Amino acid sequence: MVQRQLPKIPELLELMQFKKPELDGTKRRLESALTISDLRTIAKRRTPKAAFDYTDGAAEGELSLSRARQAFEDIEFHPDILRPAEHVDTSVEILGGPSALPFGIAPTGFTRLMQTEGEIAGAGAAAAAGIPFTLSTLGTTSIENVRAANPHGRNWFQLYVMRDREISYGLVRRAADAGFDTLMFTVDTPIAGARLRDKRNGFSIPPQLTVGTIVNAIPRPWWWIDFLTTPKLEFASLTTTGGTVGELLNAAMDPTISYDDLAVIREMWPGKIVVKGVQNVDDSKRLVDLGVDGIVLSNHGGRQLDRAPIPFHLLPQVVREVGKDATVMIDTGIMNGADIVASVALGAKFTLIGRAYLYGLMAGGRRGVDRTIAILRSEIERTMTLLGVSSLAELEPRHVTQLQRLVPVAAPAARRSPTRVKA
Image (cartoon, rainbow, N blue to C red; front, side):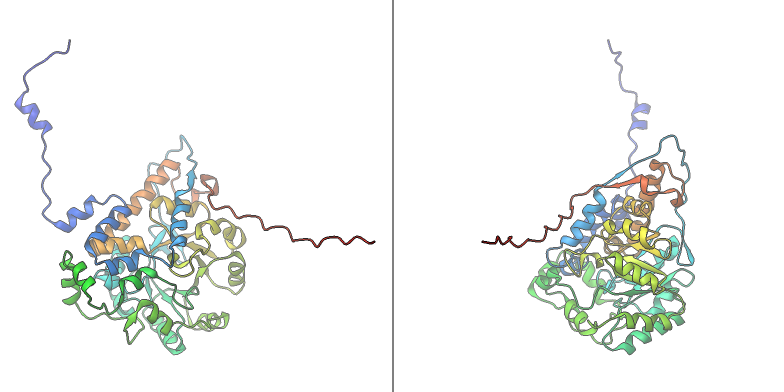
């Protein structure tokens, strides 16, 4: 028989420890976010639909993005047992400098439309975490102001080649003068992809008020208050705006971009140069032969050519071909620290996060970006510990198996002409 007794008040008080209420709403929201997906949920609740969908969406049927994320889910880890990894080292040397973590913040356009702190929040959070920050040509903060927000950290600049080449050349000079150490030459945007969410939402720069946007804004007054009471958007390159994102891109970008442009920029740029938007092995080899310092396997987050190759699937073969001669990096679809660990295990020297950073920004400004980095850091450290590795250098292809859903179909044999029989 179980022995029964009357409850003792001191023992009850020990069990009934009430949590102190958190009066800071932003802190309370961010502490409740345990994953990047949680941050996305908060961001969607707090951001007008057009701005959120610009971040969250991709091109056409959004197949490239969904496939990229599925590829990271379709992995199997192979941990080593009885390999103590009590303390893990997540630092890496990348493109001639240090990073405390194996990821940096990717270039994102129109960032202050997501949340008014924009690139300043991203650069400041990157500085605090000891990781690189990349400013987009279509960023909404100037090169010089990003430098001021991250004066002692790693600043990278992402370059689009514009129709007016002098605009691009001027940006290269400004970034060099501001001490940016790496240039990310982007090659996958000769024209804008068909971003259908933006068209359906009527998303434009600057935002246009419609009945729909007003109705959507009613439960999100804080976003509009921030937008209307902060300085006018400043673009890193564009001097005039007006129209949809696709129209702005098509007006600025040049479909004639070529290897000749890469040669000109390479000659101008004093630091490291990386080509972003590489999507096959042959291009990787040619770029390395031309002397670039690194490549980023990327399909632009699925925002350009839908059904484009999956960067994570390309990674092992590209690393085998050029990994000894150049820095291979990867983006697109990264939503968990385990995705980053798997990428490093398969040979990537570094990764870039775009949407994950913006979800944090929309969820809570600078503190939200800090939370994004903290979540990913925790997931990286936990995954490494469970795999039994103490440093990124210990990660090897044997730690990861890519499970395949999309297996290429063999090309059909050439059709043979019927044999003619002589009479």
